[in-house]
Length: 158
Length: 127
Image 1 (cartoon, chains in turn brown, red):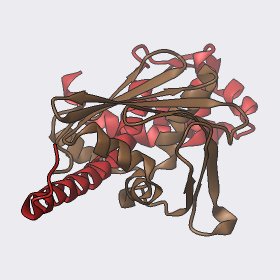
Image 2 (cartoon, rainbow over the protein chains, first blue to last red):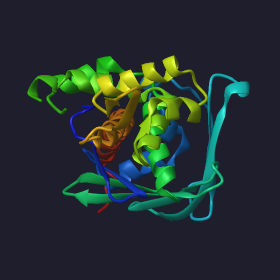
Image 3 (cartoon, rainbow over the protein chains, first blue to last red):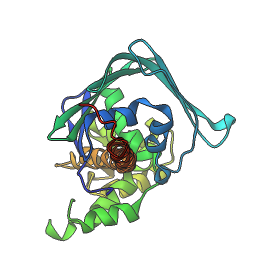
Image 4 (cartoon, chains in turn green, yellow):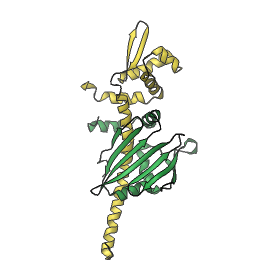
């Protein structure tokens, strides 16, 4: 069932955002969904985001690279790329994100919790400005999804 | 403040959806400024800047005070709400992704379970 477990975000420092969430499946399967391109692209860009993924190349092993391209067509495409600096199945994937010229490091960890998986994702930005920009970009990049916000408010989260 | 529990979050997101207004907030984070200062800094007309400031003020992100002919703007106390709103938007993006990931994991689980059953049926289970 989707949406049963809560996604929690904490700004750990000026430079770091941490996201956690529990998944009702063993670490091996959650790891698989992150490390196989055909599975990864199904959820990394959910339809609700409204931005199509044009290309998705992933060589998920330590030292491998990745490249994701978003956009409606080639003229309006936006590329994200970097390197996997540590891939330790099924517990950890670390990669860099380098298209901005500065390096952001993302670490995702999968921890077994009695057959379920506790996922912890940390994004470490090169500067406070870059971290702020990422937060503000996520507000600006999405259309204002008030319906979703309403649902959220109905749940009493806000 | 209780009566503002729901309305201002909409107002906050609306206020933050504009790049100029986000820059104005950043600028005010460095210190107070008059509307004239802000208009000059952002290369805008006074009227244009007044509108942006009004949106920020309605969202509770900025307070203004008129002294003589000068209206001074500063970040509202508790202006951290802006960051909380950004974090909430960021969280929503991950929540969307992770709900989709949930579906993929559920599918993989069903596949594993089906495989497990097949092995048992075929009597080839090894432990």
